[in-house]
Image 1: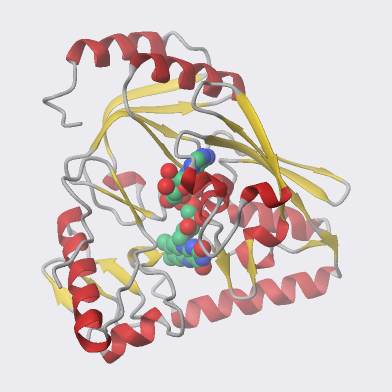
Image 2 (image 1 turned 180 degrees about the horizontal axis):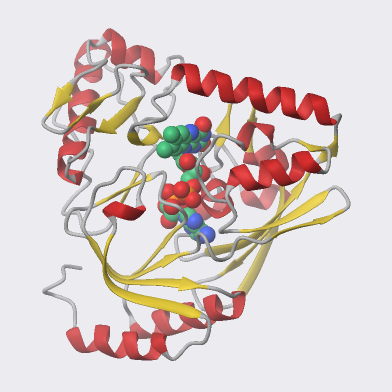
Length: 321
Ligand SMILES: Cc1cc2nc3c(=O)[nH]c(=O)nc-3n(C[C@H](O)[C@H](O)[C@H](O)COP(=O)(O)OP(=O)(O)OC[C@H]3O[C@@H](n4cnc5c(N)ncnc54)[C@H](O)[C@@H]3O)c2cc1C
């Protein structure tokens, strides 16, 4: 839906009703570039931030009855927001719904909790299993959605139960295999109406020194190989079967490639970066250039891991063969 095509009254009415919900922050025309790891993209028409589960439920019900589109984000470390922005309501769960509590070997983590905080909280209690997540700059909600993973672990190893708000504003719950986890895949990718609220992680007691050793080993590996000081969304592409995306991109001569203000990292070819002032379209263009170069060289079609969000005409990463 374009901004012009959207009913101004529907937007105005929705804003008034949303503003009447307790414990909900509502802001209009919010520049998303400042809130995303890519530092690019236009404005969100209406950005809401629930501070309680009750306000999150109420807001979802209001949005669903208003007919406005809803976009849910965590800390925006895996998305590319269109330069034209995001129509309707954007619900940002980070940093408000961020509680973590322990019950035995389980951690109950609200969707807005940062993975680094979860890993640190677990470590302090000698609970192992989430060391892999310490350096992933996302929230629990985004990580469950994506089945985020690194090195030798992924969310699918530790997630037991997830509570969410369904498309009708009711609370739902899934456990174990119902998460349908696969490589960067979960039940929630196929249920875009669901808003993840909380996840139970089942961890195991581990020697504190081993946990810290693992976390520091992972941090060093990341620091040595990834452009952590650049604006990016992490690995731009999924790992194609039988290959490594970074190696394919390097072999295609695209490591360090630059077009206008965006390019491919010279440190890790799997990362597409904003050199400072790039538009979302310039970043998307680099995705297309890289995909084409790799396809022309090897016939392999790289699948983006980054998710386009907001008002795009077509798939911004689609390239011409
Ligand atoms: C430097 C860097 C390194 C990275 N390293 C890794 C890595 O090693 N492994 C890895 O897997 N990823 C990595 N990433 C990518 C990213 O951090 C993860 O995918 C992370 O889990 C995304 O979480 P987020 O909160 O930022 O989600 P967002 O980017 O905000 O959203 C991602 C998707 O999840 C959905 N979503 C978010 N929260 C919810 C919710 N509560 N309910 C429903 N849907 C939701 C959004 O709609 C969107 O489709 C890296 C990114 C960067 C910038």
